[in-house]
Every structure is written in C-alpha cells, then in structure tokens.
Length: 570
Image (cartoon, rainbow, N blue to C red; front, side, top):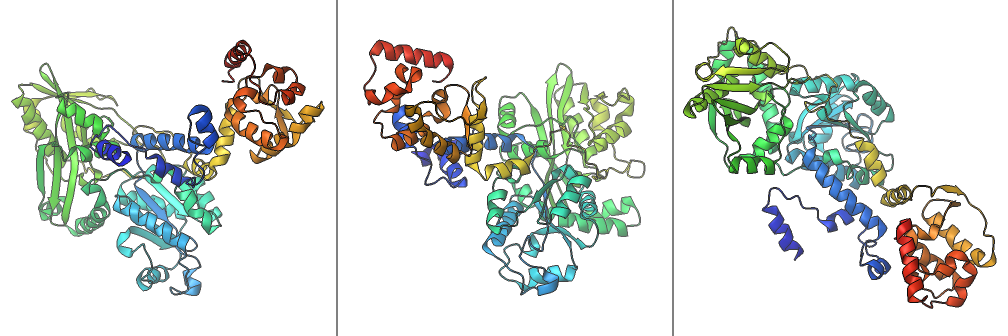
C-alpha cells in the first residue's frame, strides 16, 4: 500500500511526498519510533521523538519547495575532504576514513543534482591535485570540480572571486571548513555565505550535514545536471572573448544558434526552476513552482515560450523564458528572464522580437513590460532602458508600454548596445525576493539531538502560568513515594531538579511517560486512564493507594474529565 501511494504521488506535480520511514531513519529512530502505551491510550503509535521528527520532516519538505536553492558548495581540503595535511604526509599519507568518504559521496550527489562543487584551500595547488590524481579511492574526482582556489589568499577574497567568475551572488554559496578561525573570518567578511564548521569528532560530521536543509536538492532537470560542464564551457568562451579583436568578431565566432519554441510538458520543470534561480536578468522576480506553472499553462491563464542556445563550444540548454497574458489590446508580460550565462549574445533581443510577433498574431497593439526593480536585476533594467527608454517613465519601477511593431522590429546593434554581462556578484545583498537569512547551521546542530528538540517543545507547550521553579521536597509520605520517580524522570528529560508550579500531572505532553515511570517505581497498579480522572488524587495523594485502580463513579469521572479539558490538560 505504501509503495502504491508513493507511485501515485510521484505522478502529481502538486504533491510533495514525505516518507515517514525515511524521516524516522534520518533521526536514528528505527528502533525507538513505536510507543505501545501511547497507541493503546490514544491510537498514537509514535513516540514523542518520532512525532517531533515527522513534524520536522514535513516542514523541511515544504521549505525545500519554497526556498531559493543553494548553487555553489565550496569545501576545504585538509582535515575536511581527508584527514591529515597533504603537504606534510603526501597524497598516500592522507586518511580517507568512512566519514570523509561519506562527505565526498554527498558532494558527488550534489554535483549530479546541478550544484557547483569548488575547492578553497590554503595550500600548494600541486599538493592538493596530487591527492585527486594519486588516490584512486577518492570518491570526489577532479572532474566533479567546477573551480578551485588553492592559494594563501584570504578565503573570503577567494569566494568573492568565484562569485564574480560565475556571475552569482554570495548568498547562493555554502562554505564547509573544519577550522574555527577560517569559519569565523568567513562569517564576518561574507555574512550571506552559509558557513558550516565541521565538528572535530568525525562521527558527528555526517549527522550534522544530513540536517542542513540548504543542501536538500529537488528533482533536477537535464540543464541542472550539466551545470558544472556549462560553467567550464563558459570559461573557454571567456578566453575566446579576450583573444577576439572586437565584440562583433567574438559574437560572430561563436556561431550562435537560438531556438525559440512553446513551453511544452517537458519544459515546465526547467522553466519553473529558472523562475526560482534567475535573479539578474529577471523582469518581475515572479517565482513559480512546477505545479503552479503547469496548472496556469494548462488552464490558459498564461501563454509563453522558452529559449535554447547553442554555440561552437557547446549547448547552453534551456536558458530563457517569457510568460504573458492578453488583456484587451495589450499583451501583458508576466515573466521575462534569461540566464546570466547567455547575456550579451543578442538572445534578449530575439526574445523581444518573438514577443512582438506573438502580440501581432493575437491582435494586441502593444506589449507591457512591468519592471520590478531589485538590488540584483540591473542587467534587465539597463537593457530595457537602452532599447525602450522612450516608452518608460524613467522611474526605478516602471511599466514599459511598447508598440508591438517596435518590438517585432528590434535589432541588436553590437557596436552601440551596452555590454550585458553579469554585474559583479560580490555584494552580500540577498536575492531578488529579499529572502530572510535562515539559520541553517543552528537548525542542523539542534536536530542532531532530536530528543533535546522534543524536550524544548514540551516545555514551550506548557500553558500560560505554569512556570518552572526550583525543586521542592515532598510534604507528605505518599508524595514522598513518588519523589524518586519524579526526580528520575526529570533527569531523563534533561530538566534537572525542577518542578512545575501547578498540577504537573495535567501536563499532556508527558503524562503517560511520567505515569509509566512513576507506577513502575511506586508499586501502584492504577492505570493512567483511571489515575488521570481521579479527583481524590488531585485533592490528596494519600487516597490514591487504597483505590488501587478502582474506577471512580461515572459522574465523578465525567466531571473530572470536563475539568481537565477546561484547564487544557486533555
């Protein structure tokens, strides 16, 4: 049944499945997820820790859909990718322990999902590369690496240099290092970089990294899986551009092939991904999930086309898209975006021409291009100002209303057009949607102890007025018989010698667990269902022992249950 549900859910783009078994295993609860007493009492088969884990799993799945993904992972070498210092012990002397190999496996997985994997190490480059070339047991290979900075420059400077090379913002970078000093420098100099400091204990490395939500990957498109290769091709283009006598000569030498077509079923996932990943040449910053885009296209709420590009160096893949809707005589542009890898090639002009032709075919006399300015989309602002400045009002946020004929006849003048290259990506500003910095490292460290998270949630759930105060010894003999059990349970929960300043037996998050522990140590044979309804206990614990499990009269039990519900205990 479970496998059948998984198969059905996989066919529905709007459904994101959370497999409980995998979530529970991720918290090492395979042996401790079932609570027999809780199942009998309330038909809740899960332990408190398992319920916490499942809740975290659901939020994590939602977060992976909503967040802007990380794009680059930069990792240190010595004492991170391997144990030991390669300059001192040589390639054969570095230690590839199980934890180090599992870290490399994770990086390979991220590479295959489309993230760029880079090195940043204070080292001699030949010593580092000797490990990659001389150790066949390395899981992370040189071909997995998009770029590296192996030198003695400050690591924040190296990351800024990589960001400029890729045309990406630093807020899309993850930095992994074992050195607390290097991590502190990175957090100070580049606060928008997610810095992960590896623990000294090798056994704690992967439990920490498995809980880093920023490293969660979505199902990837073909373009995503080839992203590292594409950036390597782009370096070759940069070298060719430097050698060309002029921009026109360089563009001519590329032998560009621009292909524009409707967005079909196979393209929906990639176009949705572009709306999430593209910040610089993005007209509106509108974000869409695959399910949202698929629904709007199928219902005819939006029309659109996508753009592919090839040149003599290779295939850029699907690098641009336009979405629009027709309002009266105006073709209203909803989304107009292009990957920064394709800027300055005349592709943006070709997209405008296609938009003009489609407007004419739909009998729309003009095209609306509503610009929503951000800190990151200067390239699209500059482009529109250069080609359609007369049709805007000059404001930072402006709505360009362009005649369809002017759009269809747009020509790229290579000599006069401003160069549309990505702006330097060294700013620590957030992405176009101004997303809030998520404390991923703090979340990951907390989730390595799911029991501690459960305890914190239980304490936070206490009703208003029920505060903790210093432990007070019991005041009568019967209460004294429970004292060792109460103290023991408090210790198990990590609370120490503290008590709750009102009826602790009514705290729903730990009633059954406390009662099991207390009854086992006191010799009482009174089930929780009877004890929790016993008004005599609440007024005087002396009366509990004689009852020995005897159910109170029905009316009395109903009154007690009603009172407990009013107090919020049930």
